[in-house]
Amino acid sequence: MKVAFIVRQVEYSIPLGVAYCAAVLKERGFECRVFEAGIKTDKSVGEVVEYAPDVVGATVISGTHRSLVEFFRTLKRELEFVGIFGGPHPTFFPEIVAEPGIDAVCRGEGELALAEFMEKYRDRGDIPSDVDNFWIKRNGRVEKRPVRPLITDPDSLPYPDRTMFIKKYPVTDLHGIKHFIAHRGCPYRCTFCFNHAYNRMYGVSGADCYHSRRPESVCAEINVERSRMNVKMVSFVDDCFTLNKSWTIDFCEIYRREVGLPFQINTRVEHLDADCISALAAANCWLIHVGVESGDEEYRRRVLNRRMSNEDLVRVIKDCRQAGIKVLTENMVGLPTETYQQALKTLSLNIAAAPDFAAVSYFTPYPGLELTKYAIEQGVYDGGVDDFPENYMHYTLLSFRSEEDKRRLVNLRSFFNLGVRHPRLWPLYNRLTNLPPNRLFRTLGDLADGYYLWRLIPRRTGVRDFLRLFRQYLLSYRKVVNRWVGN
Figure (cartoon, one colour):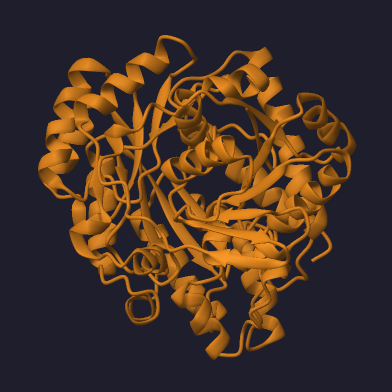
């Protein structure tokens, strides 16, 4: 039995959710391939029709859901198959199963749920209605099942099938940065993150939200992958890599001895004490992503539910850089009810901390988030799901208290990283934020961000591979921005 996985577009990173699901299905005898929906729908549909899968699945993020619904609807005219949506959007908005072309949605973790669904479908020849995590559509009615318990032993899963992507789209192997997962889940309740809603859906809290792999298993996976693909840097996509201090210290010792490649992590400043920073530096941690989100300490505590102080943020960022680890801060502008003057506090905090890169985006009100509810309550968002952009770097759905605030906040995203890197030029950028938002400002900001991100990569590619990667960047940029350049 054949399964086709659809991704909205091919980028540099390999989506691990799809790769894990494919690995589990292949262990159970299913044939799997991946296809890009892309912007040339006829060509993409033709490739899938030629493969003739029995089941077509897609991981769906809010913002990509409209184009993927249309892709499945078009594909249904050419091919008979069972269409399944999984991923963040159907997890929190499973009602999308009512759309034409969609036969089922999978909420939450998909690996074991999809495997059970596929085995029962293979055995019975009909869409099963007794698989937990699934909502199915049958005869115009939606049948709903609850979620199954979380996977508490991530090491019980096979390594994700990255080779499926590399064989089909070799560009995914060029840059040498490969993504891995060491932990699943996060116990924190940041209002802008999906984890609080995800944990509530599963009825878990505290330690029950967070499940770690063995350090030895993580390192073994990295070494297996570097033997068969281009791995020059390891990127851990866990929400909070250093949550467990003893695990972190053990991992760093094993990684230093058995792998040694530069790696990057996401974490919180509360879990970066002197011991952790020293261990990470010794293990060749190259880059740490730290969430700042807002420089307004009271807003960050009251609205975002993040209780670290500005003083701790600045101190830990400087400690990491002093230890030889580069730091990327995650920031948002255009938060619900935020004014331009409040957003400048975020800029000022970054200038004081002096990270190597200051990433900034607009807050996107995804379904189920506490901050989305707050935005609706405050009258700055109408709750429309189908208005989502595909790229939250270039468009905001929120309204603002004044047109001046909106204009300056939108422009601030374009000049933010330049302002942090070159604070002496901020008076010039500050004046430019008074002008109407435009494509020139967006492009300038994107190019500056791309350049500074490129400088964070520890090893450079050759000229030929760099040009191929740059071409892929332009293609991806065109796909996600074209719809929004007029805003």
